[in-house]
Image 1 (cartoon, rainbow, N blue to C red):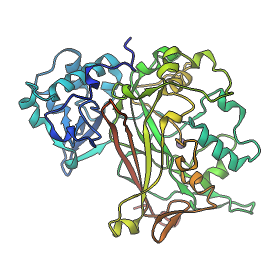
Image 2: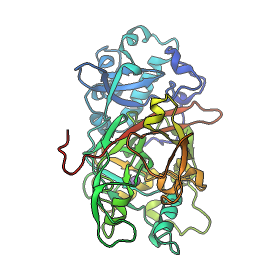
Image 3: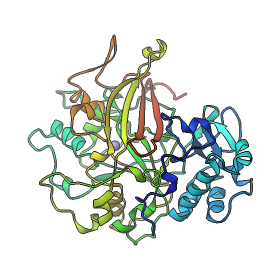
Image 4: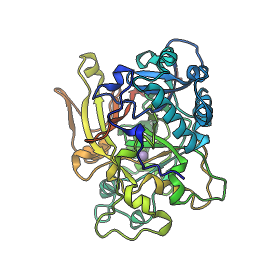
Length: 447
Ligand code: MN
């Protein structure tokens, strides 16, 4: 099996593309990235199909498959990606993903003999409408940030913030896939039950503590047979790639409903992901050692491996921004709320897969795992308003005359993600954004 953390010529920072926009230093999508999405030309009734980002363009993989220029596993992969979802490509496994990456890298490289053929297969990203990258069968959300778990735990249990199981078991719960949408998603403020402070009788109505959660999503590639667990050694062979993920959360509904079975209606009304899925291979230059904090308990062997110790974590920088309706009206840019990096996570993506399948649970191509809110060790790195506003007790200045403790109607939340370091090409995730619409009153009919 290939090591998903090793580098080859597709990572060479000196490589340039004949697509000029890909060579700009600030581009999210240089030739070393090549992330996948599903798209069509905006305003058309075309079939959605797979595409790969290069600079400000998309390589239309349905058109590229028709060129007859690709051979072997690359051809098989590109044909599989020509469909309205990437599940078929995801199912084919890392040998095919790697062959597609190499073939597209060579075809897009400055001086490639395929330039003339491939040029008509480019669609400007600004002309594209995106769809979900996969048909997501199952969605599981984890809780991998110990800083988030501790900060939130402290609000609920000041003297015992972190429960003892946290250091042993990657905590997760099964979410809902039907309400996952792609960037640009809008949703109505959810209604539900909440317990007003100082009362004993719940009320039903629009959430008044609506929040976001800054997360990454992990797309499962080839699944496992039911009953056959995935070992740490093989775990990353089953991961297709990663995206940005916003796990919108109604904190007041959550606080009232979550015991004893965990989140339910506080989370399942909307989840927003970025259109682009960045492959693990593209992230290889940004692997960093997995380190446990001083004094942490020992790892159980099924969650440990030499590769995971050496390079199990990934340094993905994350940023959350907000733009209110008034800011949009005044054409003010979004305001940054916080930033952090995924390298602070307490559990790695391989450990999430190994843990999820230890009991024989079968993962399937296109399943989505959320990392849980990513908060870093300092207050400015918090990945939710719940933390930034200290449980709603303070507020954050977002514009000259506007503050927030929780989200207001009309607010747009924007996530950005990217990897950057000297000696490697920048690998961007693009953005995942979503907008809160006013609640639909209990008496009204949904439009
Ligand atoms: Mn979450």
